[in-house]
Image 1 (spheres, rainbow, N blue to C red):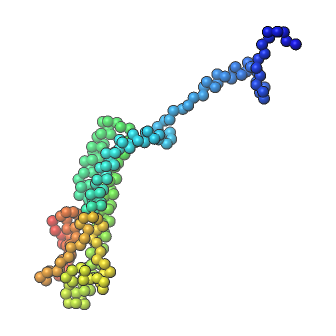
Image 2: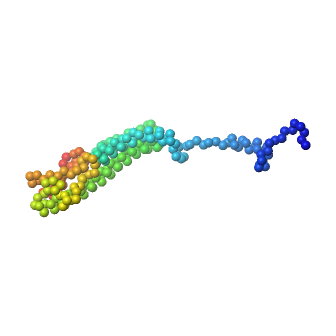
Image 3: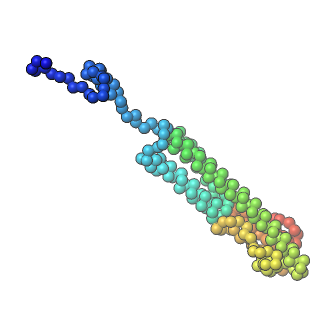
Length: 213
């Protein structure tokens, strides 16, 4: 039997660790800490994404404007070929001077290059489409002439016997149609290659292509 006043140390059930050993293990718990997020170590936090998008917003707007005008509206490349080289040099200089971080700097440098590549690729594809469609129209006009002794007055006369529908020169909102006329013994087919002035014209009588502007 213990004398009165004796203190009994608490014992945790299911553990064979004594009080002195438990005291020795407590400092190890103080070493636990939360490791902060490191850039590049995992997914970017939401706040960092918003900040990143704000810093590249100007590049995205510039690319959208060039693509809208050259690829969607005109089907050409004039504005992109003039703007993109200057834009690239300015972005490179700003990346060197301002040091905005490698992600932002690299993105700003690559955007004008990628934009020009997309515009030139689209213009090349549009030119191939227009060339193929022009050959279809020329062939149909020649068949019409053989059958009727003259060239059609308009391309609509080729439907539906020679063409199911009159094809477009390019798939763009502007400068996308062929221009055709047959007047005073002169028959021509024309389409715009480089808006607004670079035009190719076909002479049916001479059976050859020429250029205007």
